[in-house]
Length: 252
Image 1: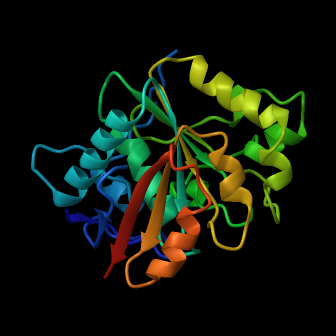
Image 2: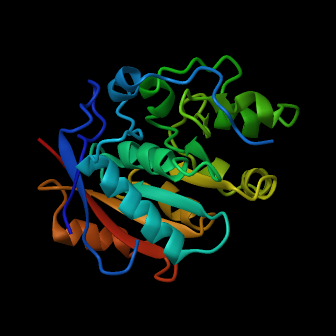
């Protein structure tokens, strides 16, 4: 099944209709409101899909992925979006899965940037983060979690940015405070779905540790970038019971 999508994240903003995402496995894969809703032009600049009255392949692709996730898990689940390697578009997929989930007026999304070495979501979405983000909250027991949850301008989508950069997230993701935080974020609102934007699987243990905190794992592979052997190696890191499948992210 071919689903046209955007380019993966890169140094320059991707156009909304410039690539595609393709699922390649047969099995998977108070309400937040925006005080400053972004315009369609602003959403395109940030490589974020949005609803219109005209059918668009890239939007339909993410809707299809959302539907498969909802069929694969129960309740308001936590999804780990893990790129096989750096540059194959994992952050792009995570961001737009969160947006697609929030298309439904009865659901909200929280996007958590867990790529502590190379965070990108706050910069791509052009969000100022005066209170910091994930690492700042985990480092400071006195930090108010609500202060690091930011309005994205996308209706019903919030962002928990990575915060201060770190070489590895293993020491953070394996803490009791991290687990309690995720449980709290999910349990407070039954309509809230969490999407964890993971570091690359190859070359770091972070994605494997994060998978223990998630209900569903989606692997993102770069089309003509990651080899079948590399994809298989990455997939082997995850519990088959959680593994939803692989998405090919293709850019032009």
